[in-house]
Image 1 (tube, rainbow, N blue to C red):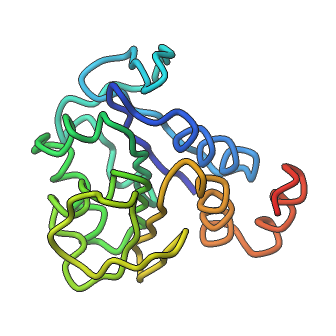
Image 2: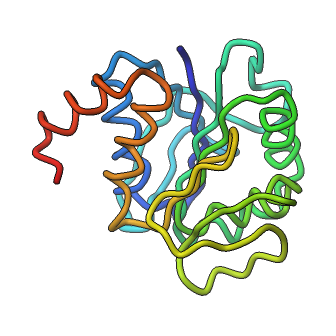
Length: 180
C-alpha cells in the first residue's frame, strides 16, 4: 500500500499532516512531493522539506501508488492551473485508484474533471462547478473521498485508514490518538 501527496506553497499543515501521520502509523507508505521544489512553505509559514519534487507527470511512478492525497489551503489557488498535476489526478481517478481531497483541494478535482456525477464536500464557499455538494464532514463516492477542512481532518484521516487498511485498524488508530 503506497500513496502520494502533493504539497504546494500555502498548503494547510493540519490537513496534510493528519492523513500523512495516521496513514504512516497504520503502516501505509505515503510519499511527499513538493510541487516545483523541495522546500515548501505552508499556510502557517512553516518550511517543510519534501521527499520528492514534482515538475511533470514523468516525476510520478504512477504504477507504484494506490492513490493520491491532496490537502487544501490557500495554495490550491496556484495549483488549480498546474496542468501536469491535473493530468496526474485524472490518471489516478481514471484507473480507479483512490483520490482524496480536503478543504479547497476539491477544486483540483473539479478542474481535473473528477467530480462530474460525483457527490463531494469541501470548505464552505469553495467555487466548484461540477458534482453535487453534500454538507457532511467526509464524503465517499466510489474512489473519490472528500472532506471539509481543518476541523474534519482527523475524521478524514481515520476514514482513509478504514478504506485503505481496515475498520479494525481505523478503530485502533482512533483510540491511540483519542479521537471521538
